[in-house]
Length: 195
Image (cartoon, rainbow, N blue to C red; front, side, top):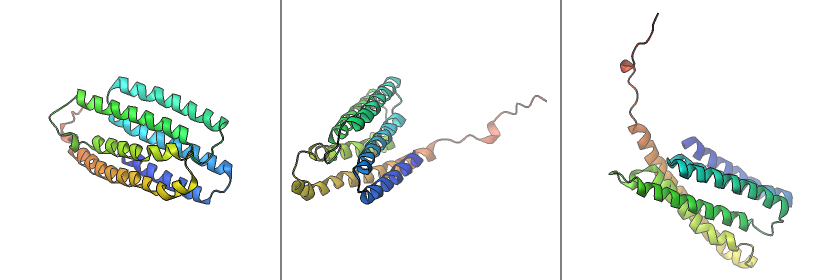
């Protein structure tokens, strides 16, 4: 999981750097496609990783196939005005469905351990806050005047900051979970050499 998160942050750093250097419409369209696709796939992987329910995982795979096909068709057909608001809206709604699946699964399989001590809780809450914070900024980006966007869009970065803080807490609990997993004792492995 740690490697996936490191890859997530690295890819988006490179994509944002590329976006700043890009001047052509093709570059911007490709940037939006890659950004939306990779963000969706990364967030979906986090849900898939933490959900043990077979039915929930099937729903995730089915919705992922639907979303990727939709995303490819959208970028082949539609010209983007300012931001790819429609795919971001669909992505946000699907990720909110995954959040409901996660909490339904957690409540269905309740145990004695506290939910706030699970790394999955912090990752999912981080995703929920990020999606909720940026949802309306992204949806309304094509409908608002440029002045309004320039005045208020920087507030959407607060969702990114909170997500990163909660992901850091999740990584802390993930490392605690990894340390608490009992390791196999090499002395207890039976000697099965038949020769």
